[in-house]
Length: 104
Image: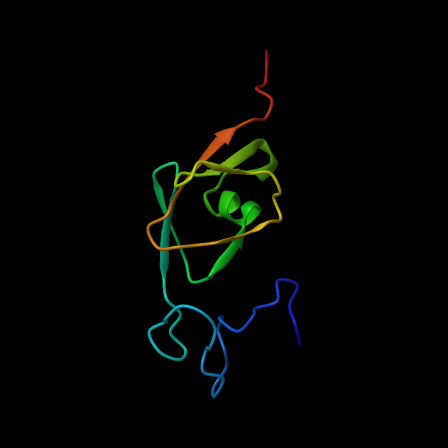
């Protein structure tokens, strides 16, 4: 069965599946922990890729559409919340609020 995000070989394989895919894990059944930061706050995942929306929501920045996400290395701003971002250990992002500010 294939999930919506298509686990392309690197995820959490069952017994005998070996994990395969890109990047070294710590052996079968032990996915590698990736640490990245959003606005200086450390975030952790074992996923090789997350969507822009997932990165924002994991950092408790909701609704995600109230923020724009920029990869600090290269200063690239993502415009598609469903775009998958390959994550690298130690990578940093900046989330900027773009939503409406409530007025009284």
